[in-house]
Length: 205
Figure: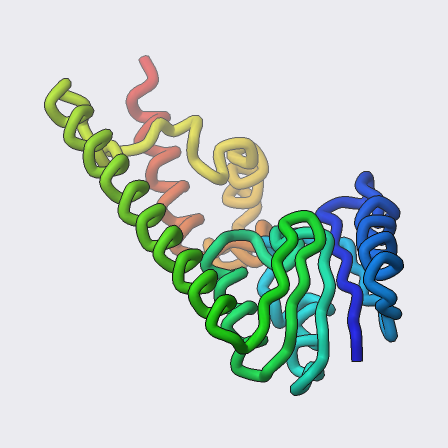
């Protein structure tokens, strides 16, 4: 089976360009697509929740998957590498039209896969190093890292906008648990907020 796979990230994008590129490639190679798989989904979504995930479970030896470019397969290099590796193990060929790659279970494909994985490893190391350097620079400049210590501002609390409703419910005899159920929060959240609200009231001149 020869599959044509098309993916766009949003409804504003169209599949026509990708399909045109694949069709044009197949016409020049006398290849006929047996089945098209098209989906509108972000590459950040887990592959098991995509149509492509179902395709990966279905493909078998000597099948071919054709895409307009490798980026259509996944959201990052590591995810794409995992997909390509699985295809190689199943003896499934992957063709990326724009890049001109034809990846199968052969030595050239394995060398290319190694180059991809090495690039991904280097990329991770660089990101980690840049993060460490940025944190070290901020620390040397006297910036306090991590979450700020001390209490949050009263006005930034989750229930602040509902304080009038909470006051009225307390006056009517509602318990913390019943208020929590009404506001769909935990009882402890209500208890802590009420304590803070009363503390704030006591501070008022």
